[in-house]
Amino acid sequence: MTRELIAELEKRVLIPTYDRLPILAVRGEGCYLYDENGKKYLDFLGGLAVNSLGYAHPEIMAALRDEAETILHVSNLLYHPYQAPLAEKLTRLSGMDRAFFANSGTEAIDGAMKLARAYARKQAAAEPFERYEILALENSFHGRTFGALSATWPKKYRQPFEPLVPGVRFVRQNDIAHLRESFTARVAALLLEVIQGEGGVVEVREDFLKATAELCRAHGALLICDEIQCGLGRTGRFFAFTKFGLHPDVVVVAKPLAAGLPLAAILAREEVAQAFSPGMHGTTFGGGPLQCRLALKVLEILERPGFLAHVGEVGAYFRTQLERLRAELPVIREVRGDGLMMAVELVTSGKSVVRQGLEAGVLMNCTQEKVLRFLPPLIIEPKHVDELVAVLRPILAALAPAAAMKGVNA
Ligand SMILES: Cc1ncc(COP(=O)(O)O)c(C=O)c1O
Image 1 (cartoon, rainbow, N blue to C red):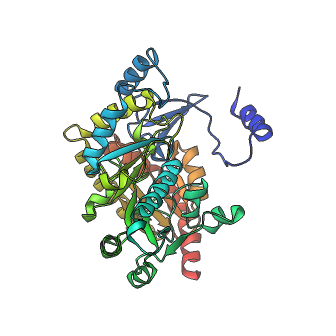
Image 2: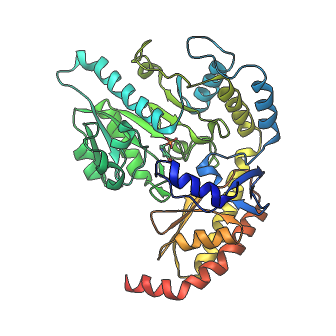
Image 3: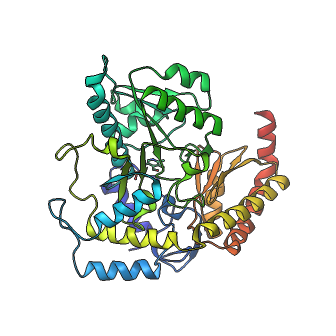
C-alpha cells in the first residue's frame, strides 16, 4: 500500500490521537530511515530518543533473532534468565538497589508514584500525619496515564481528563523560595527531569536541583529522577542526574532501554523498594525475556570503552555547529541541551522547518512551537552533524528576515 492509502485508511480506523509526518517508514539502517520509494532520511529524531543505537544494529539484530527462536513471553509467575542480570546491571549503573520492570515510561512513573505513597504510608506509623503529596515542576512532562498525567504540567494534556489523581502540586521552575514554601510535612516525593525534554530541552538550574535534594532529605521525602528521555547515555553520562551530584531515591528509565521494544524500569534504594510486597504492584508483559535480553545488549554496548565519551564529543561538536548557526542567523534565539539531547529555540514557529527538513531528507522534531529538538542515535558522527547543519542553514536563513522581524516585534 502507498503512504497515501495507508494515511487514508488510518484516518478512517484509528482513534485520532496522532498528527503524523508524511513519511511511510519501511526500513532503517544506522542513522538513516528509508521510505517506500527508497528515499533516505537522516534521523535526528531517533524514534523520540528510543533508537539510541540507530536502526538494524547488527548485535541487536543477532540477539533478537536468537531470542525469537527460544522464548518470547513467560509471565512474571516464572523465572527467566535475563530479568535479574538486567536489574543487577541497571542498579549498579544508577547507584540504586532494586528494579521493577514495566512497559512504558508513563507506566513506570505511575509505579514510582505508587511506590512513593506506599513508602510514605509505611513510615506513617511513626508520624502523626498522612504523607501522600507529590511535587512536580512546572514545564514537566512525565506521561499520559492518570498518575503521570497528574504530574505533567501543560494544561492542554491535563484539563480534558480532570479530575486527576489528587495530591500533586507544581513548583515554579528554578524558584527556590517557592520550592521551600511547597515543602510541607505532607510531601511524599518530588519528581523531576533534570533536563525537561518535551518542555523544550530545558536544563533545570544546578542550585535549584541541589535545593530539591536538600529539602527532600530534610523533609524525609523521596527524590524521583525521571531519566526516561535524558538517561541511558543521551547526555554522554549513563544518567543525566550524575552531572549534578544528586543521589535520588528512585530513578525511572524507559525509551532506549530495549532498543525499540517496550521496556521501562523503576530503580529504587533498598529501603524504598521494600515498601512494595508481592501483589502490591505488577504487570503482565513487564520485563519479558526478549526485552530484557535486548536491554542487556544495549547496556553492554553503552558500557564499552569510549562509547559515552563519543556521545560527549559528538555532542560538543554538534553544539559548536549550532552555536555557529546562531551567530549567523538571528532567527535562532538560543541553543540548549547536553550531549545528544540538543535544541535550538527559534524566534518563530519551527513547524515549517520540520516539513522542509523532511523534503531535504532530514528528520527532526519541533516541540513547544518554536523549539527544534534533536535526539539522534548516539552513534552519529560529526559528518552526520554536518549533513544536518547543511540542510538547516538555508531553511533557517530563508526564514530569517520575516522571523527576525517577528522576534523584534514580539
Ligand atoms: C521525561 C519523560 N517522562 C515520561 C515519558 C512518558 O514515556 P512513554 O511515552 O513511554 O509513556 C516521556 C515521553 O516522552 C518523557 O520524555
